[in-house]
Structures are given as structure tokens and as C-alpha cells.
Length: 482
Image: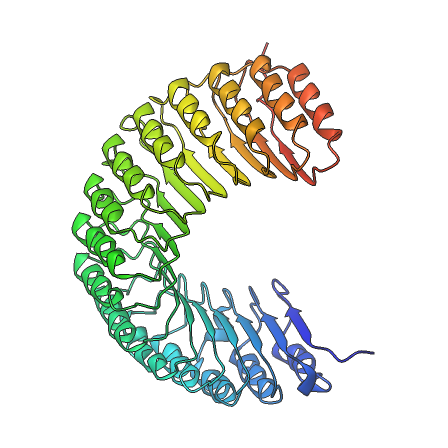
């Protein structure tokens, strides 16, 4: 038998499992020197206590050559109770893993986790000389506060750490002081290349913390990827968001931006003006989630379009917006003008859910622009409940897709677009049939009440004959009551 190199131990949801049973399994590793990757998953275990954490720590001491470690204790209340007994042993074991490159610590929903846990782990991680990637998830750990980040600056002592992903979403004790601690760490950690911060539903955060974070980001000249999640942080305003946008102008190496500012009621078009002016030519991927931002209008997306035009290397765009009355065809027309000049665009994801003022005119403008996107490989369009889209709009989109020779992944959501009929579906079917490279098709037409069974049968029969198609998802309208 070949030597084991990768091990996954998953007992999630095994409610009758106890510490004694897990100890036997954890201590059964033979030839531990061969193991390079190990993953422990102990989610939803009601009868397991901190003793298992101690056993895991002792087992890790044997894994001298481990390179990849994942510890998942999701919603294990008893396991994380009195964690002080186990965390030091695990931390001591980690400190001796001189070959470890990646670590994932997931404690989501463990309500007994306190700030001291982070202190022990940050200290251990700071001296691991091969460590490259850190992921720590304490989502919904309600006892975790901003003080958990006080020791974060110790990571700056380890120049090998390039990627850090911290998730503190729904941690009610997280305040501006937490962002200030992060800012202090960032100023000292000169080698960081990839940063992801998640503070969804942290309602105590204000512009003061965002400004501190933004000022520290300006110094991250080596940063290549930046992901920020501040969804439903209700106290944040344009002042805080604008400070983050301004910082982008200093990040000359940045290739990826992923911002989730959904449900930010005070975010307005001003953010787009500053964001677009701050974009640098190194960018290849931009993802923006602005769902539920009621002050967003056509003017903001017009500014965004101008920003896109400055990015010759842009390959991937994801834009999620929702504004029932504010967004019109002018938004798509403005964006379409920028798509015409993005020669390297490979993936385009647009969500305009429930924009009732969007009509065929906007869809036609988008379609005409994308005909010149010869490198486009993936499209994902969500125009669900845009009630004024008809067969004419779908037909123009179908003809556009037919021109994209390298397209192999199509997602199209037209749920609730009740004016679409079998005729529109027929045109889309004809387009898909001609695509010999298509591997994935996800088509949603729920609540399109004029599409008949025959229309869907023709579509399904046509797609079945496509040899290239590997994955298909096709919805149908809700049954009509006669």
C-alpha cells in the first residue's frame, strides 16, 4: 500500500460520537511522516468536548512534514468550551510545524470562543517559517470582540505569510477598534499579497474604522488581491466607502478587487465617482455587490463605465445591483460603451434583478457591444423580474451569443419576464445548437407564463443532442391554473 499523503476526517453531524471514539481514530495514524495534508471536520458534535482539541494537538506533534492543515469545529459548543485547555497544545504543535504552508481554522457558530483563542494562534503562526496562507473563520462567535485582533500585528514578524483571510461576520462585539488593530498590522506586514476581510452584519462599525483601514491600505504596494465584505454595516456612509476607494489609487500592483457593500443604505453615486477615478491599469478582475443600495442610480454606473475604459487588462467583471426605480436602460447603455473597448474580457456577470425600468433597448445595447468581445468565455446574466424585457431583447442577446466563438459557459436568468414566449426561446435554442464548445448551460425561465410545454420540450431535445454539453440546468414556468 502506498504511503498516505492526504487525509480527511469528517464526522460532522455524528451526534453520538464522543471524545473516546475520536481519540482512537486520531491516534491511529501510521507513518505520520508521510502525511502532507490533513483535514479535521467536527461540525455539529454535541457530545464532544475540549478533550478532543487536546487530542488533536497531540496528534499534530507527530506530523512533522505537514504542509496543509484544516481544523473545522463549526457549531461545536462543547468542544470549544474551556478551549484554553486545548488551544495552547494546538498552538505549541503548530509552532513546531516548520513545513506547514496553509492553515484553515474554522470555528463558525462556536459561541464559547473568546478573544484569547486568537491570541494563542496569532503568536504560533508568527513563527512558522514556511507559512504562506492563513484562513480564520469566527463567524457568529458572539463572544469574540475587537480585542481578538490586538495580537494580529505579530503576523507581521513572519514575512513568508502572503495571504490572509479573516471572517468576523456577525460578531456583535466587533467595533472600529478591530479595524484599527488591522490597520496597525497592515502597516508592518510589508510582504502581504492577498487580503480578505469579512465583517458582514457588524453593526457597530463606523466611518472612523474604515478610514483607518483605508489609510493603511495605501501602503500595501505589493497587494495583488483585495476582498472586503461590509454588507449590512448600517452605520457606514459615503465617507467611509470613499476612503477605501481613494486608497485604490496607491495600489499599483492590485489585480483583483472584490467588494461586497450590499444593503448599504447610505452608499451613493459619489462612491462610484471616486472608485472609478482610483482604478489602476494593473486590474484584471473587479467584483462589486451593491444589491440593496437604494441611492444608486444611472449616474453611478455611468461613472463606473468610465473607470472600466481605463483598464486595458481587465478580464473579469461581476456587477450585482438592484434598484427598482432608479436604474434604467441608460445604465446598460453606459456599461456597454466600456465593454466595447475591453478586448481581453473573458467573464462577464451582470445582475439587474427587478429593475422594472430596464427594457429591450438596454439589452440590445449590451448585445451589440458584446459582439466584439471575441475572448469572452463565460456570461452570467440575471435580468429576473425585469418586466419590460420581451422576445426582442432575448433575440438580440441570442444573436450576440452566437458570435462569441469561445463561449463555453452560459447562465441566463429571465425569471418573471412574462412577455417572453416560445418564439424567444426558439431563437435561444438555435444559438445554443450552433455552439460546439458549450459545456455548461444554466437557463431559468420560471414564471414566464407564456412559454408552453412544447417550447421547453423543443429546447430540452435540442440540448440533449449537444455532445459538448457537460452540465445543464433548465427551469420551467410555474404551472398555469386553468
